[in-house]
Image (tube, rainbow, N blue to C red):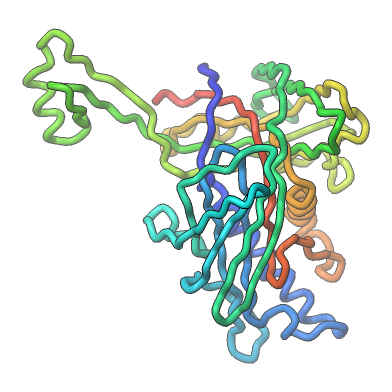
Length: 356
């Protein structure tokens, strides 16, 4: 099993957008049924921003809009084309983001606006979205300093009758700040790419032309078939288990249940090293149909992102078990719109279990 440090693209957040857009539909439906609210407060056209901006990732912001369907009070979401999107940092540097219509973004229910510039840790960012009919939407967030991991120790274990990867994570908390931590586990699909160099040019062995050429020249000294893993921008969230009563998960659900994320604040260990043990369900670790690698991540998150995702985690736990009247919509930080514009920085370890 190979372990390495790495960074992954923001594309996984597309799946997160789909789930949050679904929840927004649920929330709007709930509130539109309450006598103290009118449907127009929630289902009239609104811009929806669902963006976790992460240090080291390029600028990619999913933006959609709500559309009322007939007189039924139902809504759906549409992509936006006319919006002007500008991000500024605390030093007044300004970046214009344009809609990106590449195939990797087409499945997103929102339009993904992009810029090749990368977000930086310990930096405050401001976003302003100007739409010709929906007005101006603004939000602000801060990307925290990258968390400092002391150690990650892993072992194969059995937990609740399941094969799991047990991971003990120790990190150092910054005493000068109020910190919010999130732990996530992802399976990233990859494919094996085979290639070789000939006369200074790279050739793809997996193409018909490349294979024919390689078979012809493979005995020439210096010709070598190389291999590399190519990310497919397809991510699957892994179930996590924790028994840590200091986690915020202990207040939103039964710790015997799986979670999508594990949450911590530093209220009880400010300025100290903190150690926690969690368990990743290995069910998807080895999959002949979706070969890939496992990413275990410790994130330091802005408060608004932490709060939003914590409530989202609660909905994923409670939805279907509590009456809808007891559910409360997450409060985002998007002015004149819906959703979240939140910052994070991360450390991660990568594990290979599939035979690639």
